[in-house]
Image (tube, rainbow, N blue to C red):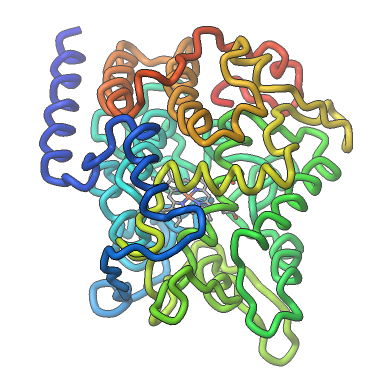
Length: 429
Ligand code: HEM
């Protein structure tokens, strides 16, 4: 067992060194629910007024070493359009295998995602679909160089159904409906999104538009996928995050459009959807996601600031205030339109109830607490050797400092009511 503790200390050493070299990963992050939340609210203000903090509009370079190139035959590409685009421009390794620490700093650099959120996403991807020894994960399918603490794990993001990859996505199809192809944009779904802005003089795919699309994507899965599953993490958080991230981080942020403008062309570029100019016919080229020319990322400072956990929570609350069904978890029972939704309180022993999540602080608390409970739960019983210790140590050392200790911990995690659903995977939720 010596090698495990060696690797465990190695993993910490790497983490400490890396976080020291990327102070933006940790700066201002302890106790998000308290401090970052407060400062974000102060900075943004309910009326969305600008602050005196200077804004820097940053154009993302897509030339030279960052010129777009399609993936090679062995390069990994998967369900996340942002990660695919970054790899196609060399902001992430072009082979699609990403170190969680260097990767995290790139998500901030290219998209303006806050350090605490990008580190959390990358950590989760590493723990449940990657390799805890090299702190890396594949953005697509399995990579032979990556070890995994999980039997049958290490499958990369494309193989992370119900752990990370999930049903009722913005544009991609449900796992069971498309024989496991979760990487292709389903064009009818994409067209539905486009139609929401079809007659607009100045089309802008903002949060209000994505909220309407969200209503559609949820109902679409309910009415077409007998095995549709909407878990507390993969459904309630991840699939909604996909909808929120689009206006929050794909929009073009310029002096003329400080709140961001997301045109049809930008949207199509990020999703690798091409339109035939003569016929209007759309096609999707898998893995060809591209950062548009002259595209300016979400800027630091000013109206908005980085896109972090509290911003996501705020966006989700806006969507769920209009469509409270987004906060119920459950699934279809083997037939279409048979959705059974449970209050989250049934799963968390009443600690977090669905409607509580309309409160910003509770939702931010829940986001972190759910990760602290589902990772160990998922790792249990599917482990190779003692790598679980490395994984759990990484989880607590990285995530715990981000959580306000006042956030109630989830003592009971009772997924029994979900396990009967045909779409429930054995791991993740
Ligand atoms: C470590 C960082 C990240 C990881 C591990 C990750 C992972 C994923 C995964 C697994 C999905 C599939 C979810 C589903 O099935 O619905 C996804 C979707 C998505 N991600 Fe990411 N992501 C990361 C960062 C980002 C960033 C920085 C952005 C935005 C700028 C982003 C935008 C999106 C969008 C818009 C979708 C929805 C795609 C669709 O449903 O059509 N992601 N991501």
